[in-house]
Length: 153
Image 1 (cartoon, one colour):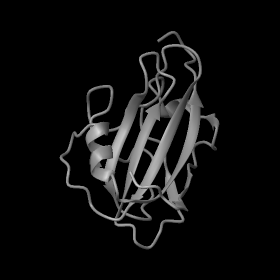
Image 2 (cartoon, rainbow, N blue to C red):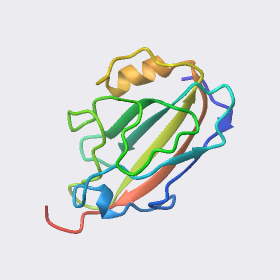
Image 3 (cartoon, one colour):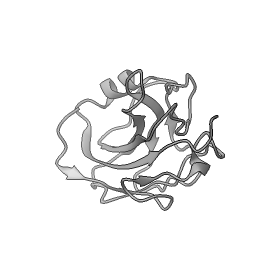
């Protein structure tokens, strides 16, 4: 990916940056995606891409959500699945909420503003997505939330 010069402002009405993600958005709740809002989107942006991942997973970075072709300035509502979804580490498309096996994990919601529409198929994995994004990132930003299971599930 090219080095972006602009910074997107990414926030959620559900949790603040570096704060706990409410359980409704996890395997202990409804397992629906949290609302995400992106501002400060550059004029040349054609689409947005979202990558949600957990770098604290025992077997390495765990992908929870891959979405591209999100319209610029579109709010991602609670439980929404905008754009086109890729395959996450659970082996399916769409959102898969936090469900750490033990301890507190960090969940990064990274948003990329692209100057093009990506030509990749539904179900593409993270590597395919990153390859398609290369050279097209005009801005990026992130919000990070944490989660630790409350039950023995």
